[in-house]
Length: 309
Image (tube, rainbow, N blue to C red; front, side, top):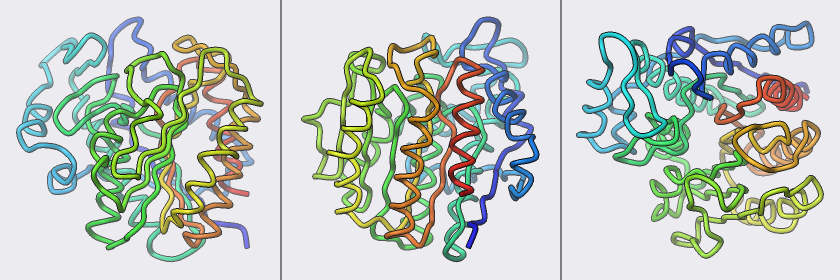
């Protein structure tokens, strides 16, 4: 049976204006959406994402932090929350819909087996900690979604898979003491944000695979097949969540990895098989990084194609 794939997005995510020259621009999301506006994606069930609620955000973020972000928008122009994280008129609404998309996707796939979802949203989220915006991220969407799975759907084992080239420090920090969540990550090191050491294991639920600059397909696939996928299978997740960053591509300007589009197809196939084996096929993926527009569009659309297979 061909799985149902739902695509969650919202126009508000385009209104987050980071200013001239910023790598995390609306053009990124536009490139992804244009790549998915093709006949081969006609079967996508396209859904307008809701906004996350304060209750959902507060499961992973401190109340004072949520209040601060909600009040952070300027009337005009851009305000920097740190050296590279920007808010503008519309940014908060974008972040709320980005988080809300992943929450809604979790609710959707939990309705029954055989459903997957991809969230084409921005800003990204995996660097946001419980109380700090950083790395282009305001709310940690994947963490908010995992908390939804734990709190509302009462799952006992949720896997978060992060293949963005930058380590998801916020996601790791939020769940480092939560044994119901397994966080696995491959990422370039050294690279921003300087976290993700292999010795960081949380309560046995964190598995980091730092990779040196110029790592190519063979080494990347070896670490997934030899380390990360076996840990995921041992965990037997009831839901697979994916922080889908495509910035380990060889064309990306913010890192020095040597992956290509086929590597994302290969890994997506592995993750679909994992979800089919243990989670009734339930998998939710959300866009994180990827800053070369052509590489991003090609890689994200290949990822979605594989989720539909």
